[in-house]
Image 1 (cartoon, helix red, strand yellow):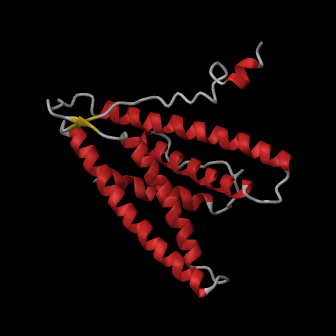
Image 2 (cartoon, one colour; image 1 turned 90 degrees about the horizontal axis):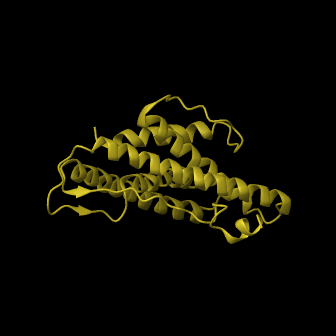
Length: 201
């Protein structure tokens, strides 16, 4: 089985499970207790909750205090997402640690997990674009426009899946190699964000 064939149903399950309540405060009920499957489900869940955070905060009538609280939740979600992507990359580093790298091997522009991050978000776009394409309260023009966009997203999903599987095959056979560069986000670090470390003086 190709890796993206493992990802897709897990991403879709997490998205569908979230939408049973469609509430950002719903606790996650991850059906996987271990392994890469657990992290893939968690990845899609984090992305789905954040998708809806982003919808809520764009309400022009949102209470400013509530918006600030929500911004803090978005910041934490972003950090959780980044940490999880790096953990998934560590899984691949361990998986391929004994591969003999060819002398002419090259490094990819992004790591496998960051490509999988895009695949997870793409699954969300497809879910919500399909939802828009099936609305019963929208104009024919809106429905047609969303159906057209949905077809583009589905093609993109197919292409991205193929690219990820090719990358993993190349890494497995030593034609490419990977590294994990920690994101080192400075604005979340009390020692590197001047607003935060200035408060400690």
